[in-house]
Image (cartoon, rainbow, N blue to C red; front, side, top):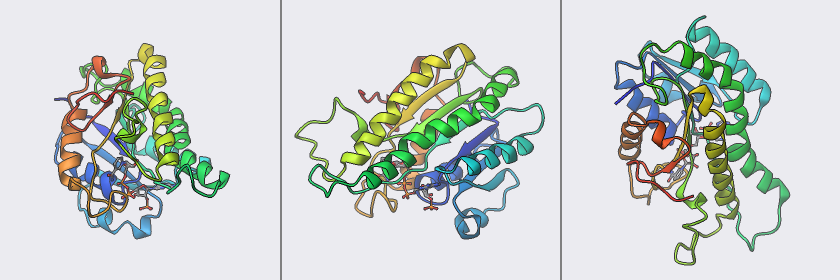
Length: 253
Ligand code: NDP
């Protein structure tokens, strides 16, 4: 099991993002945890945590200026010589939009902007810091989260092979498309960044009791995120470009 010195999690105000922050805080190897939120003033859960390793910073994932300011702030926090070991693209929305919905370009664009386009832009803008981590992470094994990795929280509903009549996802067309796109992004960057020594993987957290997942979901945030972080810590080069359940079981694309 390998843990990062530094990790950044988007959409950490609540739900799975907040759960991931709590899990990483349990590991003393993790020295810097950057939790991004849309509005710091309303980040009550995070603001209550007394731990000098935690840095709460603003980020609206769809705003390039906000991403640029975040990169600047994170660079200062990490210090001159340290890169970022792990970027977790977690922030997401689920727009209700099915095949028979009133056609709406605006709804489709909003869904794709948050879930598919933003992880691409954020990962690209953090690439120099991820590359720096490869060079400056000492003996940490290559293609591990202790060295340099981009993990994207996707969803099983983005799997084309599992999209059959039996699955009957309702009103999830736009959301499914957004997760399929982000899975393709993960596979492509894993290939493109192999020569840089950077790992990329996509995970489905399961059906989780959050505002998005609803109170009827199967898993608590603690159950999902503890399994996720354990799996992240086991990642090796063999996993790069893959799509996994929280226990590291492969999900077909
Ligand atoms: P929640 O709705 O509970 O939380 C979503 C988080 O994303 C919030 O912190 C929210 O910020 C943030 N966010 C949304 N839009 C933006 C934006 N434009 N800029 C910055 N932050 C934003 O969702 P979950 O925790 O359930 O979901 C987390 C991830 O897990 C998502 O990618 C989701 O698709 C995925 N997932 C969830 C499942 C589930 O069952 N819950 C199942 C499969 C996948 P704010 O608090 O400010 O609104």
